[in-house]
Image 1 (cartoon, rainbow, N blue to C red):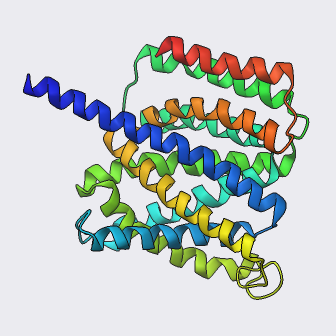
Image 2: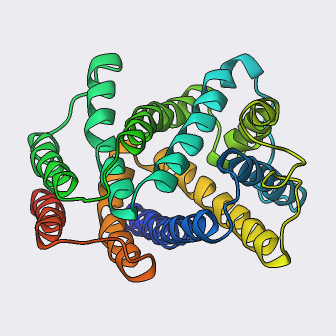
Amino acid sequence: MASLADRVRGNGRIAAGLLLNLLVSICIVFLNKWIYVHYGFPNMSLTLVHFVVTWLGLYVCQKLDIFAPKSLPPSKLLLLALSFCGFVVFTNLSLQNNTIGTYQLAKAMTTPVIIVIQTLCYKKTFSTKIRLTLIPITLGVILNSYYDVKFNFLGTVFAALGVLVTSLYQVWVGAKQHELQVNSMQLLYYQAPMSSAMLLIAVPFFEPVFAEGGIFGPWSVSALLMVLLSGVIAFMVNLSIYWIIGNTSPVTYNMFGHFKFCITLFGGYVLFKDPLSINQGLGMLLRVSWCNVLN
C-alpha cells in the first residue's frame, strides 16, 4: 500500500508540474509576441533579462532554503549553458519572425529530433507507439507549414536552428541531472549565470545597448513592466522544464507540448490575427488526435 501511495503522490506531482508548465509556457509565448509587436524590445536583450531574473529567482529560493546549492565544475556546464543561450535566442527569433502557428509547428519537430539524438548518440530505444507518433507529427507540420501564408525563409532558418539547439539542450538537461546527481534547481542555479555572462558579452555585438531600441534605452513604464513580467514567467518556465525533464524524460515533455500547440495556435489567431486556414486546422487535429490515440 505504501508503494502505491508513493506512486499516486509521484504521479500527482508530475501532473501538477505539467499543468504549471502548460500555463506559464502559453503565457510566455503570448507575452513575448506582444512585447515584440507592440514595443519592439530587442530579442537577445529580452533573453538576457530572462536569464538574470531566473538566476535571481533561484538565489531567493536558495536563501529561503527551498534547495541547497551543490558545487559543480564549470567545465561540465559549459556546453549546457551555451545551448541554453541558443535555445532561448533562436526560439524567440522564430517567434519574432513567424506567426505563432508557424513558431509552434516548428517546435513540434523537437520530439522527432530528440528521438533521433537519443537513439544515435545514447543508444536509447523507444516503443513502437512512440516511433509511430513521428508520422502524424511530421505530416501535421508539413500540412500546416504548406498552408501558412506568412511562412518566410528567415523565419524558417531561425525555426530550424531553434529545433536543433532545443533538442540538444533538452537531452543534455536530463543527462546532466543524472550525471551530476543534482535536481533541477541545483543545475539551473549554476547554469543560468553562466548563460547570462555569455549573452552579456554577445549583446553589444548584435543589438544597441544605450541607444534608442537598446536594453538601456528610453522605454515606457508599461514596456519595462511587461519585460519584467516576462522575466518572472520565464523563470517559472525554465524551472518547470528542468523539473519535468529530470522527473520524466525529454520525449514525455515534448509529447505533452502538443496540447500547448493547439492553445497557442488559437490564441495567435485571436490576439494577433494570425491567419488560420481550414487545412491548417486539419493538420493540427491530425497531430494531436493521432498522438492521443498512440499514447
